[in-house]
Structure formats: structure tokens, C-alpha cells
Length: 186
Image (tube, rainbow, N blue to C red; front, top):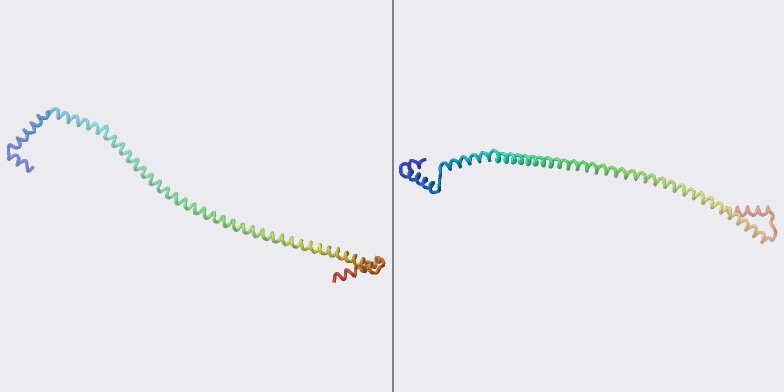
């Protein structure tokens, strides 16, 4: 604004610029009616583009922006749910491990109880077998002893018969057999 009074004071400079602009316009073929019609055409095209192209494109971009925001929100929710699921999984796993350990301990205790019971039963059976074996041994020993006594008595009788040279009667044989048995028992 300070330049305009200076230019006006100079007088002919403004007129000279106006003439220069007119000559330039004529040189390049400037037509005022054509210029205004182009401005009106540009405004119509700009209005149509604004109404039918720019607004729908902005609406599509806004819809995409909202979908992206929803996707990010959903991703955050899923991430949070995944973290919660991981925590629950760890809790369940810890609980399952504790229950499994308890089952193992119970099984070991039950196995020990069964093992102790079976050991006692085996010991009882072994003692029974040993007692039966002792009884069988005693019976067999008594039988062998009786057989041995009879055999010794028979040998004593045979030896006495051969040494004395006479035939022994039943009473003599019985008496000698009893004496031999008494001597063996002592």
C-alpha cells in the first residue's frame, strides 16, 4: 500500500504498466469473454468434482479410516484377550500339574501300602511254608528214624543169630529189638 502512492506520484508508471499488460494480453491473444467463460467452466467442473468425486472419495477414505481404527481396536482387544488366555492357560496348567503331582503322590502311597500288604502276605506265606517244611522234615525224620531203628534191630537180630548160632524165638527177637531201640534213643 505504501508503494501505490509512490507509483501514483510518479504518474505515468501506472499507465505504463496498464499499457504493458494490454500489449502482453494482445500478444498472447487474451480475450476477456473467453477468459470469463473459462473461469465459469472451471467453477462448474470444480463444483461437479467437489459434489460427485471429491466427497465420495473422502467418504470412502473416512470409511477406510474407521475400518482401520476398528481393526486396530479389535487387534488390541484380541491382544488383551490373548494375554488373559495365556494367564488362564498358565493357571490351568499350574493347577493340572498340582493335581497330577497329588495323583502321583497318592499312587505312590497306595503302591507302598499295597507293597507293604503284599510283603506281609508273602512273609506270612513264607512262614507257613517254613512251618510246613519243618513239620514235614520232623515227620520224615521220625519215619526215617523208625525205619533205621527197624533196620538196626533186624541187623542186631541177624548178628546175634549168627554169633550165637541158635534160632531166636519171637520173644527173644522182641526183647533184643527193644534193647537196641533204647540204646539208640539214648
